[in-house]
Length: 247
Ligand SMILES: NC(=O)c1ccc[n+]([C@@H]2O[C@H](COP(=O)([O-])OP(=O)(O)OC[C@H]3O[C@@H](n4cnc5c(N)ncnc54)[C@H](OP(=O)(O)O)[C@@H]3O)[C@@H](O)[C@H]2O)c1
Image 1 (cartoon, rainbow, N blue to C red):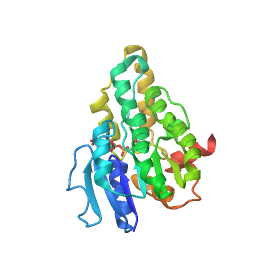
Image 2 (image 1 turned 60 degrees about the vertical axis):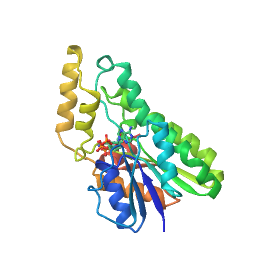
Image 3 (image 1 turned 30 degrees about the horizontal axis):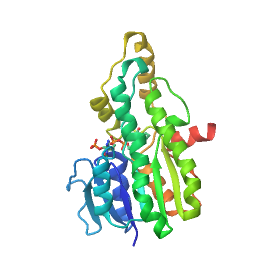
């Protein structure tokens, strides 16, 4: 029996990934900033634990309460779309605390048990914007590109210890509440000189084209967790696959 701990399971990719692993017989430790028992089907293989990846005490308590597990999925993240001039340094720090330092802190917290056992997999969920730069996304892109770079480097030092690190890179998934959550948390401030560009970007998003679904991401996380031959960077979703091929 295998066990996975997933961050950010209150909605979107994290919630679907928890369901996906449960359906395949795994024990799932679904973590949330605000735990809710009603989101996932009841199961004796499911545990819901509180976890805020920006809080060292919360990380230590969650990892201790979880006990041994085989796979860590660093999925928790927050979006941000704004010209650089429209976002405060406080909000920029908040975004990096979650998207970048949260991943690093979680990885550090699980390493002792993975190293001692000589096995374990860490799957980091980043973003297809790291394949193709877009305007108004500089902070979010930087936070995720840092995780790509971190993952590829730390993977080299952990491989000899039997610990695998993989990156799942989703494309744009309008089905999740990611955009609404980003606006609620980060605000939306488009100073006048950038409004035409913002309108152009919104039009581009609404024009359709290939997208990513939560299921694409769950399948990619599953492959990253279970297939030792999985590539280091695994695009998830038709748009991300196309962008990866064009790089
Ligand atoms: N949707 C997309 O278009 C897209 C595309 C590429 C990559 N991604 C990435 O995929 C991941 C999941 O996104 P999603 O689309 O599923 O969005 P989502 O529905 O907004 O889910 C984000 C999750 O992260 C959690 N979270 C935020 N800050 C946290 C913190 N400090 N500690 C612990 N959990 C925290 C949220 O919990 P709360 O409910 O408590 O805030 C929520 O459960 C993110 O890393 C995102 O950057 C998304």
